[in-house]
Image (cartoon, rainbow, N blue to C red):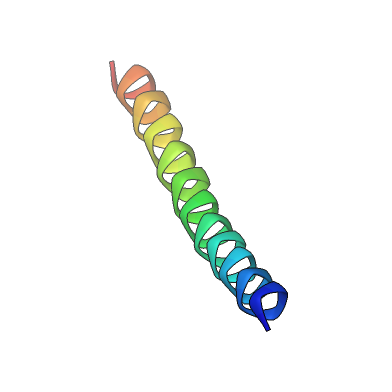
Length: 42
């Protein structure tokens, strides 16, 4: 029972980590596109 609850907790952490990782990648890509657009605008 204890092992099962710890496994589900670990799975929840990995799901949250994956969601945060995807959001972080999207934010980084948007920042890179914004920087390139600033340089191209000049």
